Length: 149
Image 1 (tube, one colour):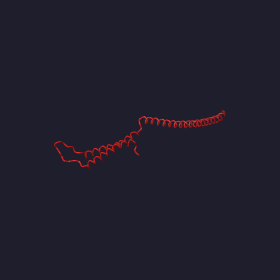
Image 2 (cartoon, rainbow, N blue to C red):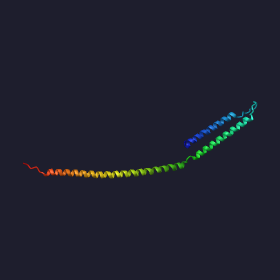
Image 3 (tube, rainbow, N blue to C red):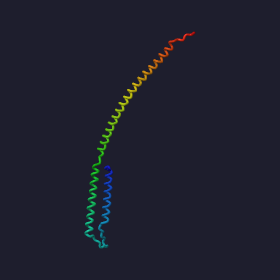
Image 4 (tube, rainbow, N blue to C red):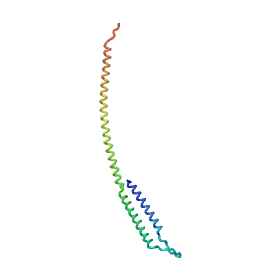
């Protein structure tokens, strides 16, 4: 389904067609003008006059109906104020979503930092144990003094 602006453009194009066709019909069925001093014997028959009235009524109806449709579409378009309000509402909703995403990311970061600190403590404890073991091993070796002979 087309959006309202596309529909409005379609109705405007249709109205242009109605105007163009009505002018064409007027030119086609116009009564010839009489000039003084030049008389041609051409009068309209009642059938031609009725046909002209039918065309006039038809195009008047088409043009007025299309104009009403255009007015209705224009009235249904959002005005500038509601568009601004809508944009503000969308921005607020977007900010709320970003705040929620930020809060979730902050919680994940805090959890990762806690796990990292626990891992760091374990590594430091392991390094302390290794250093203590090395000291004890070196201490044992150093406790046995080598006696000169």
